[in-house]
Image 1 (cartoon, rainbow, N blue to C red):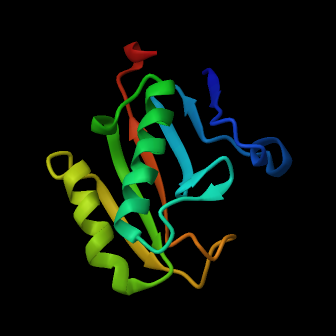
Image 2: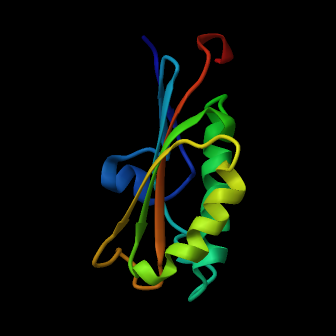
Length: 131
């Protein structure tokens, strides 16, 4: 079974030893994704805007793996402040309202950057014939 690595171009991928996404057969896993551009946090202080930016990055990684948000079967959402649950869940619902993947949302003590409020990882299953 082939293993395809999907890169976002982050300088941390080689240093840390990870890929933005990995596709094996019809399974795609997208790594925990934060709201960053060029390694710098975006939408500082705004969990809703960070979530939108995260889903843009995830969508691109899925497309690069010949998959789409419609193929997502599981999402894991990490929040540094559970008070952001409503704002983040609103965006999650806009993206996945009809798809309805399994979801876990957790509160964590922090991320590498204190400006990151949200991190999201997803898994997708696509037809074998899509790539």
